[in-house]
Image (cartoon, rainbow, N blue to C red; front, side, top):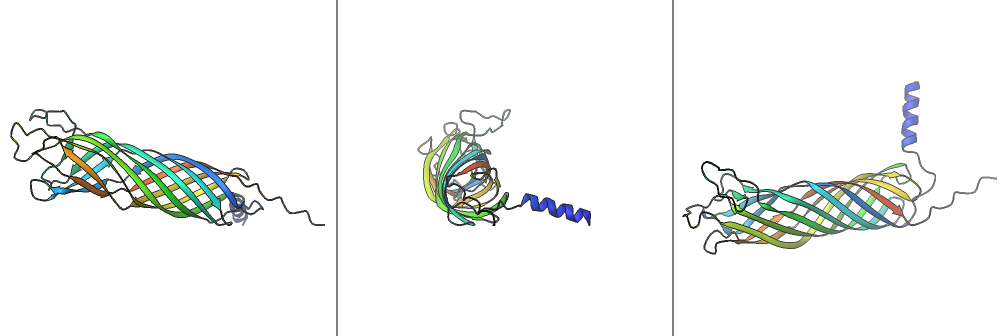
Length: 265
């Protein structure tokens, strides 16, 4: 019985209400954290030597992400915000399956032989800028720990910069055995995201947000250029950018808290 009473008291302390409603009005926030992009699955507009498109994965290293938000608390439970985000990361590999006529891209400027067949990663990186309009629902707005969920729609501007050597060139002669490919392009497409997290009430006007985001959207197009005009030319690569991130942020509420009610007579 005593254990149950202690457990109940502990839970009540964690989720204790502050005694005042959430302040309606403007707030600003900054978030920094970590993101891990899904493999960027792309398909080419031109066919490979086997008569089928190139189906490759642009794999990107996990890296840091940052967000800035300006929002408005509509009610105790609902708020809306405009969010600008940035995600970046180096290219880890560009490759397709074993059914591909051209398996992928290797490090540029490296001559592979039977004695040294290693294929290192290509050079480059992928970066993404997002502008999103979010709607957030605060589950326990007057508690010290407030879980929240939300969703957003907007645009995603992705830049791809890749330079690599084709891992193999079918039917190559000594003059065409080494060919490079450059993908240096950017595109903007519709994007959406799902949001979940926890907010800790540090003070009446300061919140500490732990936020998870899942980002996806419409296909993006990136033009590629092969180094040999009569050689391999995949054309335009198209695919969907998907990403997950976890950030820790500070949210400052500009509205001053309401004064406490007067004491009873």
